[in-house]
Length: 96
Image 1 (spheres, rainbow, N blue to C red):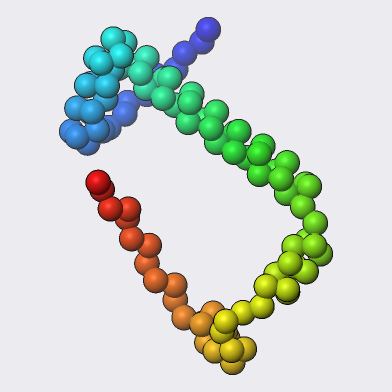
Image 2: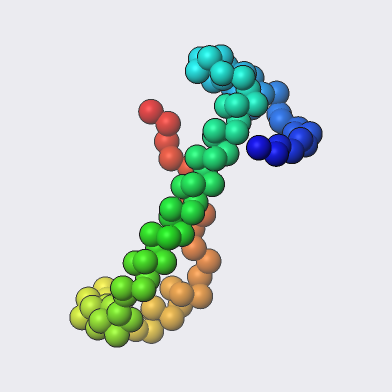
């Protein structure tokens, strides 16, 4: 198997977390990073495949019909103004 090398700059906090996690799993930091990256890439590919398959099954006319039936609590003239407004910024989840 061919392998490649590259320098990776990490903030001290991430480096410490990596070192701790690799030690807890009793693997080298390089191996821990390799596995973590493989898992992330696999999850991205799986998500892309999942959503592509769902989209292929979708029926836009049916979806629009469902939305049309749902109505709106916002009067039409206010809906246009609501769409023009900038959405509220997302708040990070509260830690427990």
